[in-house]
Image 1 (tube, one colour):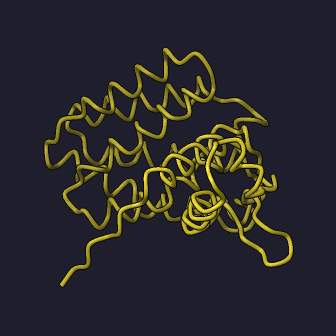
Image 2 (cartoon, rainbow, N blue to C red; image 1 turned 180 degrees about the horizontal axis):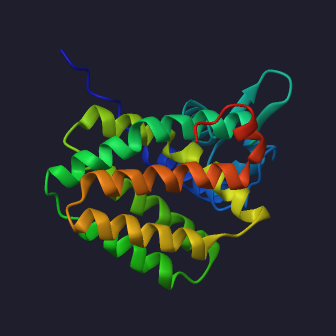
Length: 218
């Protein structure tokens, strides 16, 4: 019998989403200490919701809890990027292939691209980019496959935030997104899947060339 997940209290959810947003938009950079009492004061809550939110973020891989150093935003290096993007390379193109073969509407992906093009800042563009990729795999017909990709989604966004801070490459990636969507809408499952694979692989190779040297799939 499948157990029902315990709902997260509203204050904890509020703090969780607020901290996550700041991490994924670069406002809280990798290595930044996250002090419970300071965060509680910032968000006007007790330490309990903050503590629970940090535990959840640790579970998703966005923060690291250390007995001696406390809680910090996870550092991003070539090894971490390689691990996260290996998972995406193995799963995401296949999920998109299944989405296209299932003749699922891709209006959400098109809307996300439009939001990214109209974004006023990097934070809005980053969030739209995440929604674009999720729209490609969320209707693949296999909920377990979609959940597996959801589990690395935040870590992939953290890698992207670090890479974009060093070398913004929005225009190139936007062009690749448009081509992926064009192929998908045209019903070319293999073409869209191949374009997505190339898009994911080229990003991590550009951003973390040492990851390729250590064995990232080409």
